[in-house]
Length: 307
Image (cartoon, rainbow, N blue to C red; front, side, top):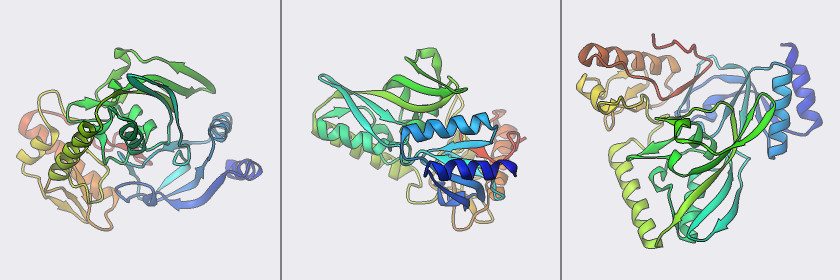
């Protein structure tokens, strides 16, 4: 492809780390995915923005990846550039009184935010303890669990869109279940945590972690929840009632612990996972007249892959 030479030149001149044809299975939590033409690892926010400007100006296909959860990559890989935010990690404390307000870069792990809050005696993100999410991914997906969501903690979001950087204060209408509606790539966000006794925070962390460990396959390779919960009920319960708990295709299996998780038992293919998703979606629709909507995102896979 013509743009590869220009991209390599751009990256080389700026000494931005990149790799050729690296398997994306190395970077997804379910450990599935073929190679991207280039994987790029900017280490500073300025590098990241400059890279986005270059990719956009040259109409080069790209996809931004944080922690690699909630993502299924094609076995054939991605004929574009996978841009990783893993090195874009920083927490700047803005105010620390009754609440702790921080500006957090998109690649910062949520567990880093939780740990800093605990050390200083502030609470908020405990419901995501143990989840391999970055701040950018958590905001973009409005990540949530146990009746709580990321939107409850976000004060401001800095977005890159069409070559412009904007800072917004999200309104309630900007959030929906498992999504932040405003378009753009998240560069950073201001997060507010509330002061709380450290022992109470510790108890919350223990409670949420024990719930997650008891009900989810946390020690296995998954990409997190497969489908969004419909308004009426839980997706996992519907899939279980449809008789698919533990159903296996190749090396991919619907979890026996939680039916809204698909496990890579060892060497599963994306096509195996898609087969199980289609099967679960069809069986639930036939049994309950409910069409499940995927929570997982797809890369190198057609958007209508479940139809």
